[in-house]
Length: 83
Image (cartoon, rainbow, N blue to C red; front, side, top):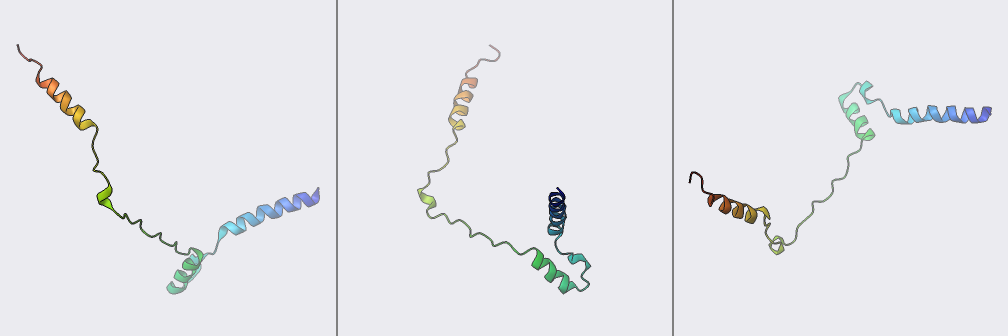
């Protein structure tokens, strides 16, 4: 039982130690602090931009509500207001 508790205590301590990371804010020189942060947080590689090969092959966007709006407007113009 003591061994199990010792292993659990060891695991609990190592999790916080691994999560701490380097303390770059205590480095005095500016270039040293920058090198510490660069080592702690490396840059992510940018993904290449997606290239669209042929935009002409795409059909133009057609709004489905344009025709319906025109029909509704035509019906509203035929209503007699003030007959």
